[in-house]
Length: 212
Image (cartoon, rainbow, N blue to C red):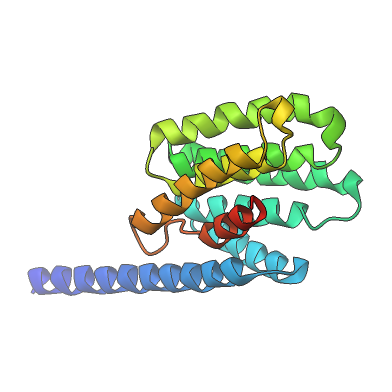
C-alpha cells in the first residue's frame, strides 16, 4: 500500500513538473516570436516585460535574462532623448550579467554584452567611439572564440564596420566581407534548441545591401 502511494505521489510530481516545463516553454516561444517581429518601442517593451516576469519565476534559467537584455538593447536605439540611453542600458547590463552568472563562457551572452557597449556609442559617437568601440570589439572577439560558427558576432562586427570610417579600420568593403560571412554562417546555423537565439539574419542582409 505504501509503495503504491509513493508511486502515485511520484507520478503526480512528475506530471506537475512536466506541466510547468510546458508552460515555461510555451511562454518563452510566444515572447521570442513577439521580440523577433517587434518594430515599435511598445511591442519591444511588452516582450521585455514578459521576459522579466518569466525570469522572476524561473530564476535558474539564463535565457529569460538574455532576452530581457537583448530587448532592452534594441529599445535603446529607438530613444530620442539620449540622456535616457545609459540608464536603460545599465538595466540591460544587469540582466546580461545575471545570464552570464548562470551560463558561463557563452558566445550568445558575449554577443549581447558587445551589443550593449555598441549601443552606448550612439549617445555621442564622436566622443564615445574611442571608448566603447574597442571594448565592444574585444568582447565580440571573445564571442567568436567561444563559438566560431555563431553568425551573430559577425553580423555585429559587419554593422560596426559599416558605420566606422575606412580611415579608422571600417568602411563598406570591410563590412561587406564580414556581413557576407555572417550570412553564410546563418545559412548553416542550427540553434541548439527551440528557445535558443536565432535572430539577426534579416539585419545582416539589410546591412549588406547598404554596402553596395
